[in-house]
Length: 267
Ligand SMILES: C[S@@+](CC[C@H](N)C(=O)[O-])C[C@H]1O[C@@H](n2cnc3c(N)ncnc32)[C@H](O)[C@@H]1O
Image 1 (cartoon, protein in one colour):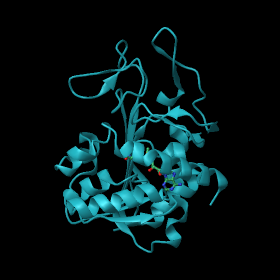
Image 2: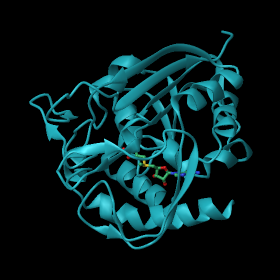
Image 3: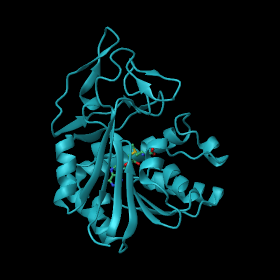
Image 4: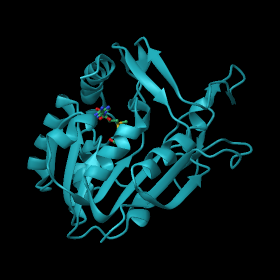
């Protein structure tokens, strides 16, 4: 594996137990029957009953098992062995009947020889991928003709923002493709703890994301943008009665999440 991805894998192995204990992931609620999928992806993916669904970068599988609870034949893939071990244990415990594979997304075609009705991936995945053309080719390889790819993700405009000393946020980082090295000791999104190990991240513009999918032969069905976020991405954000996080002022001025549905031609 690429040494940068090896670094990231070690970082995700460190994050996994922290996330498993966090209120953000609320594993106890999931065990009690909570479906962890948000309204956006449930509405935009549609009915999954009886369909085969491949979930890329599934972390420790709560969303994968939630799709299985809705009737999908769900397979989750992640390169963190700690996350996949935890997912398999939870799957056994709650009887969700999902399947989990420990693999680097880029290596999946060498590990799995199957096509799916749906390929799904969500919230915080693209920032970990250095090459979106290869990512899109993997998606196309694992979709049956006529199958649907669905992505819901944080908007690349949001990741250009940095909190200011005044308590608001300003766009200070480049919107366009770049590689970042994070030396370690940063907070993880799912709690107050700091993760000691370093990691690499990649910023991708919306144009780069869409173009990679089109080049891989997928036909775009929609690209939606949302002026709110599902977690407090910046300290200035406040949570509304609907559960979404927004800036307190000018709160519909920038996109914070987006979703894409694309189809592989054929039937
Ligand atoms: C932010 S999490 C995804 C969160 C997921 N939507 C959830 O709510 O749990 C990103 C995941 O991508 C995985 N990942 C990062 N790079 C990967 C790669 N190259 N191949 C497979 N998994 C990868 C990490 O291990 C991590 O579990």
